[in-house]
Length: 238
Image (tube, rainbow, N blue to C red; front, side, top):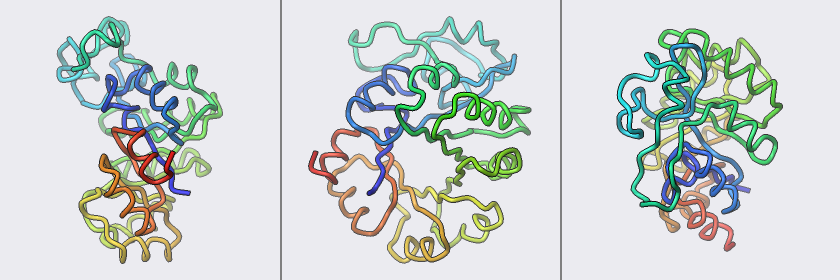
């Protein structure tokens, strides 16, 4: 079965990377939720996409320059009117505490220890503490290497923009399980070669049902989407 992940929750319908967004994605029947993490000045792992808080909240500045107490005072900006009320930026621990064993998690570390010293260990420790079904992924291959060194039992994947075959060697060296590729650059030959090499293929960000069905026919193993209900209905008839 092709897994469906809610991109930052169900960000087509709710404020991205927030508790309400993850909750809505689960209500829609996703297999898992995808989220992004950065680290505050005082070493707390928070769930937010950008390096700064400017786009998604009513605050300003880099996440790394803010203390958790400052992040907690922020409110997420969104275009959904008053439907969701005031929504805050959650910590990764709060997300695990809220949803725990109810779903899978795809955790994207936006930048590794060269920028956020120790972030990989903090993420690994939280995964262990809460016993969640989690996959750690990143464009930062050094971050994935560090996660693998800390705990080779945690599922890992690399994210990239390019053809699958270009990244097979690095995937072998990193000993990851997943290759996450943009829907624009995925091809049947690449998927087949990845599978022959023992990798699974995830595709992002897919918001069209017809495209999703085509990708399933090509053999992808997971799809990440802003609109989980649309994709689930398209590929499962739910």
